[in-house]
Image 1 (cartoon, rainbow, N blue to C red):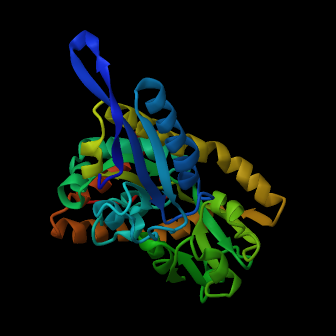
Image 2: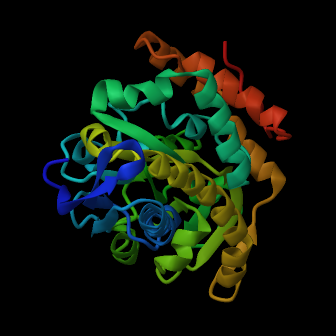
Length: 353
């Protein structure tokens, strides 16, 4: 753990088993490129850190403290996977969208847009896919010296803009931002995509680098994107489980044995929190936006037309990723099937061979 764990000077004797248990002061560096105003990063602070500290100190002789590195103060949004791998931070939260080379399959729900808008259901679908495809979990320790602690669900994605629109034709010639694979939602529909991140979103919207963002309502409210983007259109691209919380494998191995199960317990509950909190906040945040800016709902026909424009894309991705030796067709078929098994009906049902 690179000197982040320190033994206390005195050992506590455990007379009943005739051994000695050492109390340790544990310091962990934790961070994300995103600010705490993004729900999952905020929950890293208010739930994951708080509960891990509380439970470790209640149930063991150890103390635990955190050195925080949010908002890119230690690692930027594109550096978290590598930062955890190299031990720059011990625990990191990040979007798989920023790792298209290292984790090209992990953003699999983004490859199937216009899915469920319920983060709890999105997380459940992702859990079921991970359970059937070991590669998705195993790649972290095998290639990146870290352990996946939690999958992270986002709130449902819509489209915030600096202008009003009603139809796909209204978006032609406009520059719209996204991150990673969801740029294809724009390109296939004939909209000009711009790669960006939430760390720079406000300034770039304000200075007209682009005129809109594919974004969930929590960011539009908490990061005040409604100021440069006074139109928020409910189109329902879907809730995506495409972030993860990981821990450096060396750090994990050096943790006291009585801390490890507590860490995994809290991580599992944190994972569920990303679903339930995003779900419970969605309506509240959309209503808050209604009091600040213009919120409209796109017609089902426009939504279906946009989904239809993407109909060939999932198969193309599956073919390309299968050729790289990844189980892409298996994963995307599972996404379709598990979504339907969880009660979701696709506006356009993608076909994967």
